[in-house]
Image (cartoon, rainbow, N blue to C red; front, side, top):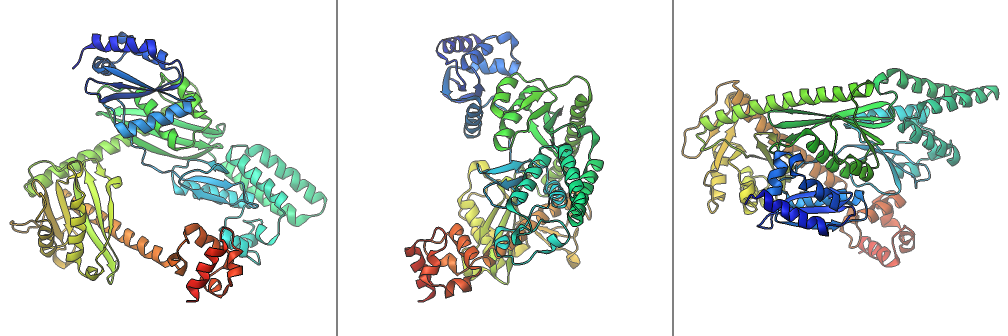
Length: 601
């Protein structure tokens, strides 16, 4: 029911009882469905803004017309409001919120400052309080380039902790002057700590002061006739100079900045984000968002900032292409300054980000049009009742029956949906040499967990008539209405492009050679093949890292790592006494007895 006068009345009633504190508010309709979740520095003032109906967009006016009730959550600060808002949006999927999928994991650099001699590491995952993090970087390549620079200039170790603890002589990296050799006492802890401080300064953009210090140290070493040290310092200065020479001049004055440009075409937004750290361009990445009703670029950008920086480190400054209504709240929550510019060099950087967003959007829309054309062709050739919205492609992989896995990939009109991919470890070990039986198990397990939301329109199998009949037989008891099952088999001489396609009750056929639709279906099959093989290799590699310790009760991943770091190998653990095993950190006498008894049955 839409009644803007009634909606305004509800809002005005809530203004009287709303708290004047940071928090999160929910707007609900007459069915108690959540329409919108928002955050505010002052909830009362935020609701007052919604009562000025003439200043709202048509979309928000419709939302106000639906509001029949409000709920509030008071939080301690703006940062907590941001987190709670994101959690509720992900859980409730409100009708009027702009829903963003932040499914990208960006690499960072990490220094564990509790270590005696910290190593610089590549890092993805949940951050810990005792570590320093730098980033994000747009790709693993960007991280590797920075790590390569740091090895040349600052000589931090890059080896794993267990290798570091057990080295008896310097490694090759020390010999080629890319490590300071802390493992064998070639540098004191105090001097190494100074290198770590220089790395932190470098990653924060303080290159000039580092170069001045190195020059002073080289001069002192030269005057003291410590020529070997002077040469090392000279090489470090040379490497640092080389970095500055090749740095992009337009970013040289920027320390810790993200630059975000927004573009809109054909009801799709693209947000292009450039990561600038220490005057270095650490790469860029696009985000695509389907426009929801008449959502504006500033609304989409604000929703993006709220979502993205809940999961990623915020820089000191964020340059954006749109003015934001809640910029103050976001600044307080993120601890970053959000800026727009209308002229000057920084304005040009934002415009460049917008141009990149437009180009990325053009590519995305072109790919979408191509996919839609292929789906229309697919509908025609396979006599499908409607344009397929979800295609599931299946394949198996094993090595002479060992580590057998099944894999499912999902394709939609927007491309591959990697979050929906699934892997199946084959449970029945008696069938791991039988592709038909494996496919039966995989499809049965998949359909046991199927819901109306993830029901496929098409199932594509890598195989021939045998696979097709096996799958139909295994799915007899399931509702296959409106689901097309298609098998794709190798063609003449197993050449790509000459595949045959099989459906139950229809004559097998080949698609026109080198046609767009044939290439599209090959791409779907090849993606399933790639994912199946990759899953199989990971499972096999994981099994190779297993040891006898995994079979002992009470020994998890951390204790296993600590034991192996202490003894060096499982063989050494076997030869150890209970007293020796109990010396490992975290292993009490009872656990040591369990380990000893396991190896001495």
